[in-house]
Image (tube, rainbow, N blue to C red; front, side, top):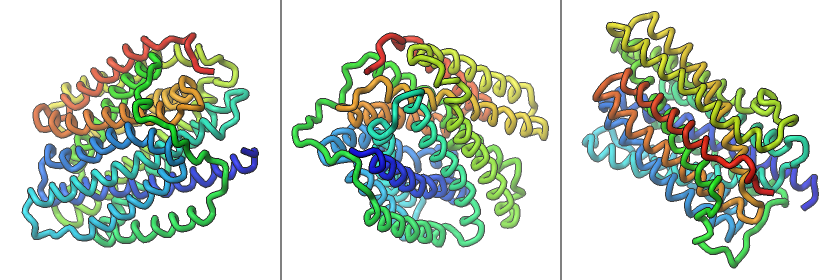
Length: 418
């Protein structure tokens, strides 16, 4: 592979991933806010995203083998194409359907979207290992740029989804996104340069299960790290903000949509910006890989303090208060910054731990764990909010980050793959 071809392929993969994540963020906000206004309970809202995460687990486990067998470009195209189909399917949703039928239909469509997202993610993240320069922290820098920019784009998607819902409605929003993403897919297919592997016929499915202790411990830590984010992110905080911001009128709902979408967008954009800056914040170019492995536990420990403090603030308040809402906004932004460093470290370490010949396998396995964490967080988000309100939501997040810190401590700093 020549260097210019590799750079061109990296740019094309990143552009495709950006386009996908813009629609992914918008779709999540559209579904959450639209069905909340239809009267869905927190647990029912969580159900809408359950199959999305289950599909992600299954997809990541098999996508590593599929990419190794048929090539990264094939899985990238499949992810983009399936997202277009999922968006178009949502235009068929009929408001007259019973709640059970609506939940089942959206769960299935969200499941297809989950498959699409993880096909695109696995392809993009694996490509970095194969295309990035490795000298002077180059791998960490390139994976941080891809991951950070992706999350910034997804944050814009949250705002876009809330804005489209308020302006053109649910059906118009998903139809517009499907048309735009289909056009981008067509352009990528035409313009994709060479530079990515086309697969090997002898790849075996059993290879997806890693024999590396570091890959397995990191994957376990990833489950609880992302579970800790989604336990408040998916249902709890958006619904709390909706209760505080909306007066129940149509105009009040629209205003609440914009404010909630804006907060979620700012949070994810901040998260993405810090992710992209993580190599500089951690001085990665001047540190060896073993030192960065050891840093994973201390950063997870620091993150634990934020949801623990927010839990105490919620317990101290007699109910929704302006000062509490302000504290939550500030605290969750701090959580986002610390979470971004943790996430960026993990995204780098999985590529450092794996070897080029099995990168899609290990990345697929790792993102299966990532999807498992999101599934756990999604289910607990609706359940904990319904049972114990915001205090239980945030307390659960603190406990899950603490578990991630303990598991990160099991990583062997001397066993980094060459």
